[in-house]
Amino acid sequence: MTLLVLALAFAGAGAATLTVWPLGQKDNVDFPDGNASRGAYLARMSGCIACHTNSDQGGAPLAGGLALKTDFGTFYSPNLTTNKQYGIGSWTVGEFATAVRKGISPSGKPYYPAFPYPFYSKLSDQDIADLWAAFQTVPPIDQPSAPQDMSFPYNFRAGLKLWRAIFLDTDPFEPVEGKSEAWNRGKFIVEGPAHCGACHTPRNFAGARQAELELHGADGLPDGGEAPPITSAELARNGWTVNNLKYALRTGILPDGDAFGGAMGEVVRDGTSFLSDEDLTAIATYLLERNQAQ
Image (cartoon, rainbow, N blue to C red):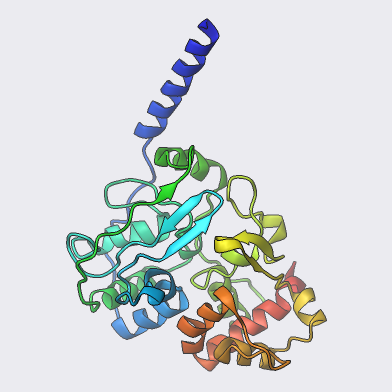
């Protein structure tokens, strides 16, 4: 009985420590003027529309409510419209930057990594300013965000601070010297806003990506989905080229005439089909040549 009391006391002390444990510094830089058109393009590239619009239920763009069922519980995408009560209408650009690149809410709480902020850390100050300008054009929708429905112990949000200390990598984007402009642009898109590794990289018991198996494919995705490996070797083995990969990312049509289904179909519909030819070339170039640099 004494051991149980001590264990509970230590657990309580640990929980209290995590609750008051401060997170990183907020972004208080002087952001440049944003370009809303470029920001809208980045929002498509980043999957904002796909994840924050409940299309199946006729939801308004970026009003949230899309459910993602996982082994940890069900995540619900929040309202990102300019509504001041339920959306981000009362935020500052600095608070927006801290949320997007560091995964910290304006109130100082950590976001669950279902929000792919580890990838968005690659965004520059100009990227953030452009996204912010684009989001300011979104009409306010009076719809509260659904609370995250997580199972124990994942519903203890302060525990994410420990997860962050162990697994989180928010290093900014660094181009690789000696590689082409297209290759480096593709690296930025794949490892940054497009967050390809969020689905195509397996995760460990804690839901963190296994870096040593980056882009080697994964199962156990939301709603029981799977993502195939997209390493350079696997893509080449399956007959992918820059041209047919570009075409598939624009149209959803595979070289054999079949079409992407499930989540990848939505990625194409709401994201990659809007990208420029140059960016699709960059993505395909990087994916097909990526492992040659390692």
